[in-house]
Length: 363
Image 1 (cartoon, one colour):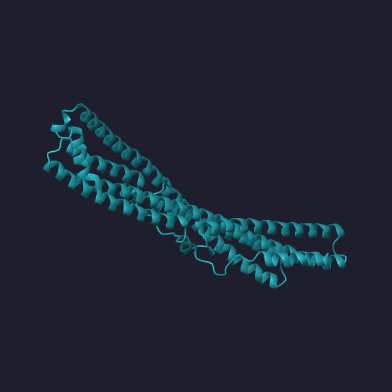
Image 2 (spheres, rainbow, N blue to C red; image 1 turned 30 degrees about the horizontal axis):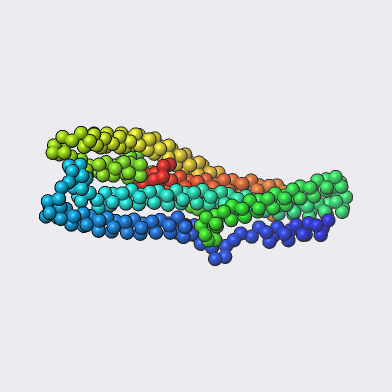
């Protein structure tokens, strides 16, 4: 039996070591995400497309000179489309690239938030493993004492068998906790493409800005900015629809469609502004609630740590049992874990709120 538990001790001692060598801080590891690298390539491609549009616009201007020089005939619809293309081709490409660039930013932010949520889950798994290790160490120490008690006839074989069973269960719980940590850490490493250090964070407890401040920034959101840029694209074309062209039925139909398109974008902006304001209210409520919970946990932890110091003194004086002190340590560790997870959750909420009032994604 002693050999059996010695083996358990050795296995768990080595299996519960966390990866720390050559690991990167989370934010530095995120910089290496593939989505960031791919988006840089996409931006380069968009730049090439803009250069192509500049060259194409130059060709159209040269073609117009030839049309005028040789008095080449053009239909009135063809003439309108030709004039719009000459004037607006590059500007439209620039606006389209702005929409794409915001889309890339939203994609990167969403990937970052997904990594942050996975980081939080991995941190929880690590803290669970630490708690399981503490519980196992306590059980192993108690079993060692129970061996002496059994040999001296102080406890029955049934009680000793129960102590063995509880120690085996603690060892199994620790092994399962380590498996879960390894699984989540593997997913995080695969996402980030590098080893990353898993550590507790200090909570961002500073006060939030006012609702009015956040409301003043929502026009930066992708959904709103995209609709506004689409309005700007339509506005580039509308001045060309002069009375000279509107006498043509097909052109009048297209002009009406453009006006309806512009109106639909304006309505979309109003709808998104309403939805985003609701998001901001919920996000601010979540952050404030988390801050309140963290402040309460800080008070409780300070009290428990003070009580632990008192219990250490009482234990040293032989006034309380080791099990009583160790059980208290486990409860303290459990509360500390909850505190550290709440801190990380708060930081995630503040990051998500900051993104939700810039380009996005939605909170």
